[in-house]
Image (cartoon, rainbow, N blue to C red; front, side, top):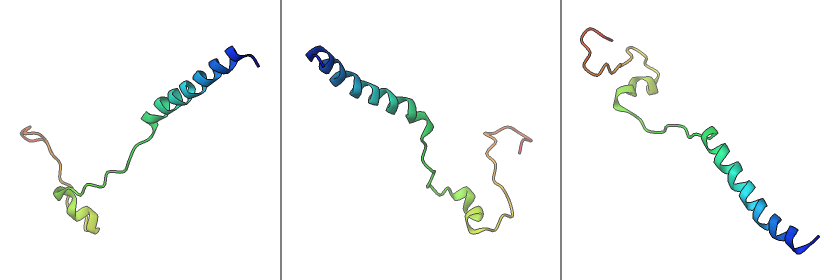
Length: 61
């Protein structure tokens, strides 16, 4: 291999890895671990009511 080819590869491989990470990032997501006070019954397995936020819309929900 020529020196020019090695220089190209030394830049192309990290660049390809960075592109792969950036393209895969939207596919990865974490589980929401925050326990909201509005779903406390759902966590305990006592699903009597489902709380719905309607943002002040009268008659909705």
